[in-house]
Length: 538
Image (cartoon, rainbow, N blue to C red; front, side):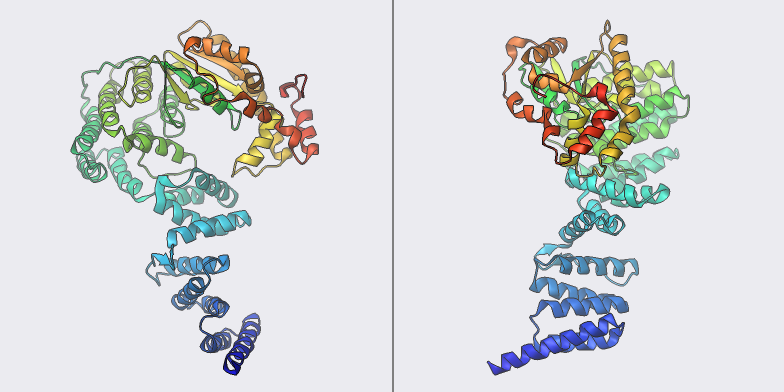
């Protein structure tokens, strides 16, 4: 017993002395003190951690990593030990001084980076969090949680500008994307033979079923041959379907409308936010490029690799949605049918890529083919209508000009509850009320006017744009039925409250009543009085 007490006493003495030396910058002496403390009591975690700290400051990173790892093994629930380990490993890698260990005790290094990134993000150390965000995202790829991408995007916006921002996201791209990016670069530079050969190798590696890889190889060959040789492939007939799109402008409540519409039996639901229509890797960017009469070859490749295949190096945070949507299809349960459809579509794109005929007319035909065929990616045609979630948002409503048989429901929400929903539910939303007002002062009037103009413009066409007030939708069954009829749905096939439960959504109508800072709510009321919803209960 006296021996144990003596050991603890010596441990405390050496540990205190080491801390004093560390604070004084006498690092070598501090290392000696901590090593003596460990010799007295090897299982005391703090001695190992402080030794790691002194060694890290001396630049002896391999030794620091070992000390931090030992501390973490002894006390795995101590966040400081994880952070020290991850930091030292990263610094050592930058200096080329270490190989990458795969695990820290029972926790993988990937998980340690995830913990580190989120810890530093919550502490508002955005610059410090970026290395771990990048490591985690590049390791996990598009399987990373959506909210992790949101946090990484928010941190990058706060800490980086210009080329540094782009390079950060390039580094976040996974190995699959990096491999296909090489195919993209070869095709972009008209090295078609090399591009096709490399693509074939990558497709065979990614898709284990020979039929699927063969379809993708054929699709890419069609693209290259159309561009290089001006080859026109025989056009595949594509069945036209009625498309319903629900849309909004960030926590505007469009998901409630989506849940309501999918209660109808004669509707096919396309799960997830398919991003092949809008975004900087999408048909919309290609459309804008064609309208400007510029060369659209690399833009088409962005669309194919990013939105359709889902394998391309990212340059910005929002691109992950495009690629995740594409990869969910290309590697999903209906991958074979999807690959067949993509091969057909790339043949239909040949007049556009070969530069034959009216470019804009060719694009619109191709765009509608894409919307029809990729909306029905399962190959099951036992449905009348397809429901898509947020694949044409309000700022990009012009994409509807390129489609047929499409109804877009644009959901608007009371700005007060919209703000509270963003604050409480959007991980990457950092604004207070003044920031919300500043960012939306122009947008509210602009988007309301835009939707109203399109509502008038499309009222007698096969396409229709319709404005929806979220609060009215939640509170009025009659209003919901009117919207269903405008969507062309049969009310007799409705299964009420299967997904949408108005009594649960009602709290979201009055969300701003429960917000802790009512001064912020009043500021939003004063800024946007004409967009604040009122009824007898508000």
